[in-house]
Image 1: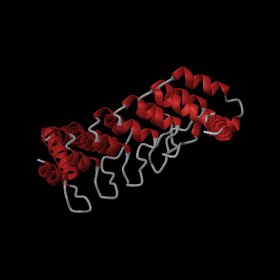
Image 2: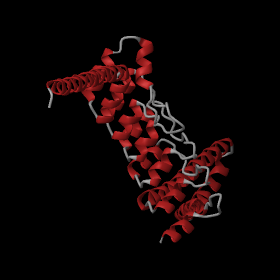
Image 3: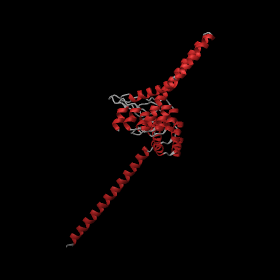
Length: 289
């Protein structure tokens, strides 16, 4: 092999090696630029809102307190507290869903709203869905709407019924949730129980329906008695003496039987109420087996 040929080979090898080195250096430089750009974007995204959402999701109470304390500007404060991610989850919804009661209280104290929702998907709805009666109570006491409906017409009580969460169902009913409220399919919470096989909530709802009827009737009866007493005071003492014992005795005689009948009647009404497809809770439960 001639010396000139060897020289050419060495030159080509050197050129190739240099070119690869340059390419490697260029690639590393581009990678470093890409990493810096990524870090920069993450820093932009990693605002107080995102950090607050993460802290609320993971149950980091101290982190939540620290972030809230750092929010000095009023406008930024509200935006950070209420801003949702692309799935509609706010820090309040995340804390309620995770069962982080102290974080819920901290957010409320800072000015977050218990009413804010995304298509009806509210903090109260997710708390009811998870069976967190204690959080439901805190939210309702701070203005959450007990019968707020989702896009499908479901209420928090429907959510409790769907997942058989009797603890949250009890709190919702105590604060006035309507047992007869229907969603877009015409399903009441009891119908949802029948479809899903939620026995505990079904039993509770039937008991609540009969109890509510009993209380209502008792109240009406007391009002009638008060009106009668007022009328009696206007009559002569002789007339009052003659009529009162007889009437009182008649009322007491069948009082227990009447109350039992009322309870049975109210339970029958709610258990027979059909949805828009004509199906009753009893039909749904029977089909489920």
